[in-house]
Amino acid sequence: MKKTLILLTTLALPLLARDPLAQRIGHTDPSKYTRSRSHDSAGDMACEVLMPGNALTTNLDFIHRCQIMPGGGVGHHFHNQCEEMFVVFDGEAEFTIDGRTSVLKGTVGAPCRMGHSHAIYNPSDHPVEFMNINVTAVKGMYDAFNLGDARLNVFKDPIPVFMTMRLDKALLRAVPGYHGGEGTAQYRRALDPSVFLTNWSYMDHLLLPPGASEGAHRHPGIEEVYFVLNGDGQAQVNGETADIHKGDAVPVLLSEAHSFKNNSSHDLEFMIIGIASQKGVLETVLGGRGRQ
Image 1: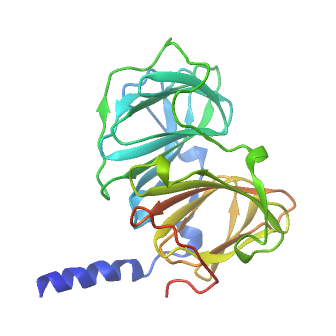
Image 2: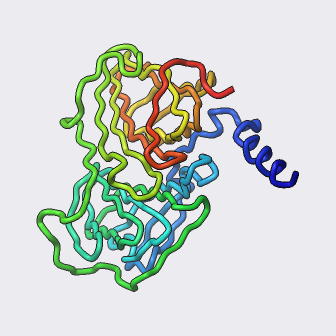
């Protein structure tokens, strides 16, 4: 009887009432940034929690939106229960994976698999816009092993010897009527499931020109966060509608029907984080009827 009660309670949790969509959206707000040093870094970052782990039921641990101050960064460290990706939106930074360092120019990210080490450093004289995405092997389980290495004045490989994610508009391809939407979207899967060891499934790059939309669809086994890289538009999740702007992060839970529309006069550009409930689940169902 006890096991049955636990199971029913677990199944019921995603169906509990939540805050309205507009309140679930994370907003980039530099006034909320807090300065700190990370994993024995040489200098500061200033960060906010853009999306906490409980925003999704899958294994998201956090999304931090930050500025890396001049001479700051994240010191060299391992995660053995997590996968993490540093993303730079503007300027450039020195990325390290497994002790090898290269200078990467934004918008770019470098995923770090479980059991591997990574770091980042800003050698410039101005802040660099930055995001840190962390997905765990087990929900709520975070670990870190610091190496006491700020990665100052190290040799830099001219060509990275580690995986990178380039969000370059030139790499996008035209997709008319994307997921049944209006107009022609520009889309690319920037990283696929083979990159990750956890249930982190993909990173997508999507651009909607003025008047275009991504049609209503849902993923029974995948949750997503749509991060607005540029532009303004409208999000619809399970029948709720909210305006979205640059720097916003929109969470979408399992089987929630969702669509996005560019109702502005400028391009609406997204980075989409996909996290599965089970490794290898990638199903997409078209249509507006989502989880009830």
